[in-house]
Image (cartoon, rainbow, N blue to C red; front, side, top):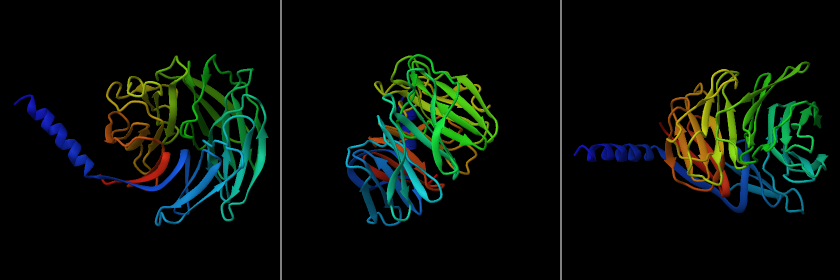
Length: 338
C-alpha cells in the first residue's frame, strides 16, 4: 500500500490538472510557424514558403494568408509597430519586409546580402525602436540591425562572440527588453547573455556567462523572457536530445548577471519558448517544446507538464487564462483555468 498511494495521488493530480486545461486547434496548413504577434483580436504569423497571415481569435473561420514572395522563403521572425508588421527571412539575402496592417500591402525596406546572413530573432522595444540579430560575419562580431525612427540600419558594436557561439531561430524569443535594457541570448559551444543598456544617447554592453547546458552546436539557450530589470528566465536544452532535461532552465534576479539552474532533471526537456504570464509578477510561466507544454506557478522553480501535444515551437499569452501556440502545421489556443 505504501507503494500504491504515491502513484495514486500522482495520477489524481494529473487528472485534476488536465480538467483545468483545454486545447483547441484553430488553424491548419502545411507550414512551420516559429513567430507570432497578437493584434486586433487576431493571431498573426509568419512561416515557411513565404507565408504570412492571421486567424481571428473570436471567429477562426475568419482567416487570411498571403505570400510575401514568389521565392520559397522561410520566416522565423515577426514584429510590429503601430501601423505595420515586419518579417525577415532566414538565409541570404535577408530581406526585411514591411507589411501594412490595414491593406496587407508589403515592401522590402532593407537587405542584408552577406553570405552569413541568418536572422534569429526580431524584437520591438516600442513603436519606434527594434532590434534584430544575425549569425556573425567572419569577424565574429555580434551582428545587429536597428530599427529607429522608421528606418533600418546596421548597429555597430564591439561585442565579440566566441568560437562556435551563435543563436537559435527557434521561436523569435531570444531577445527581450525592459525599459532601457535589451537582453540577447546565445547558444552553441558557448551560451551567454548579452545585455545592452540603451537610453538613446549612451550604449553600454555587459556580457554574462550562464550555467545552461552548452558545448555543442545544438545546445544552449533557445528562449528568454524578463519581467522587469531584475527577474528573467532562460530555457533551452539540446534539440538533438529532446528528452534531456539537465541544466536547461535557469532564472536570474539581478538582470542577468547571475543565473540559478531550476528543475534540473525534473522538467519535460528541450524547450523552445518561454513566456511570463502578464500580471503574475513572474510567478506564473508557460513554456513549450517540440514534445510538451509545461507550466510553472513558482517563478520557474518547479514545472508541471500540462500537455503531451507535439509539434509546437512558439507561444504567447492572450490574457490571464488564454495562450496561443503555433508550430508544425497548426495554431492552437489553450484555456488554462487555475
